[in-house]
Length: 345
Ligand code: AVI
Image 1 (cartoon, rainbow, N blue to C red):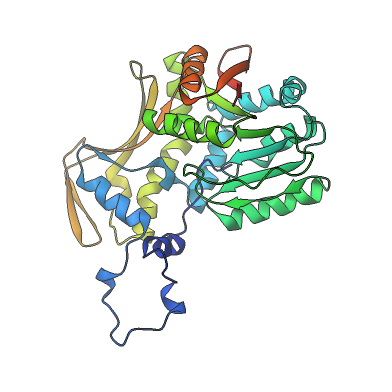
Image 2 (image 1 turned 135 degrees about the horizontal axis):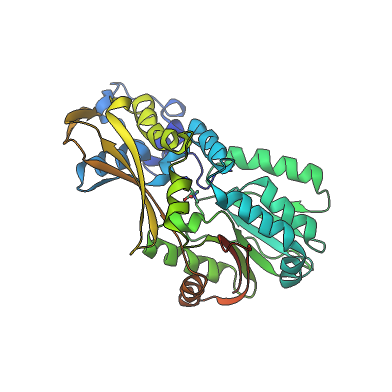
């Protein structure tokens, strides 16, 4: 389960260089080898440097998901305190028949982010003759593996992965002959990790791409703050390790020297803004160097690493309308922890 694709250091370095450039080794070498300091910085390096230089300090949660971070996220999904994954799976499993009726026969499913194969399989198993599955993910390698496994299990289904950033405008392939509705699938409440303006922009983009079809989206709900607090401050410390992994990743991939014992995980529910905020808090006054730049931290100073917005059912439906969707059926569990929405596009 990976809400954001990991960006391998080498791949992101290549993409950060000029758009037409090949990896250095594939090009004719210049006579004088440039010093390392002038080599193009990876997206992670650039964003980490910019994030430490601004106040308050922050870095995008998309950088959590290297291989170790993705494994830690999988562990989070199984924690007793982390209710979203198992609740959404239960809703999808129990309501699959009703969801399939909304979607209709011969559908083409577009998944935003190469998601958990468990979730798409629950949907595919319930649908009437699904025609094609189009997972969009920035990591082509991950996609190909996932696609091969699905092809083997669903021989009638056309599986056509698209290696792209799903938050950017994209032209989808023309519908297959005889195809039914084109339906977006965005489970996991990953929408909650976007800033509010990013969430609206993504939904607007999806509404345009899926015009004439619809979207099935999982959204975590506002609830008792104690329950939310526990989900992001688990007793085993897995969420803390997931958060701190960002600094370990910076030390191993960038030229950084974060003292991992010098920072601590903090997560709290910001009730007025209906969001969990995750931070890394400096335990003492210290300085950190990254790519030859030094950044001073006061004791208690933080790096903000993630928002996880929580929604009310009506609040999310209003956002969907603003983005150009027609909200339809909503499925929630009996404790009203999580919601799955059908949106007409
Ligand atoms: C991926 N995303 C929906 C998770 C969430 O709950 O916001 C990421 C996460 N962060 C800490 N725990 C899980």
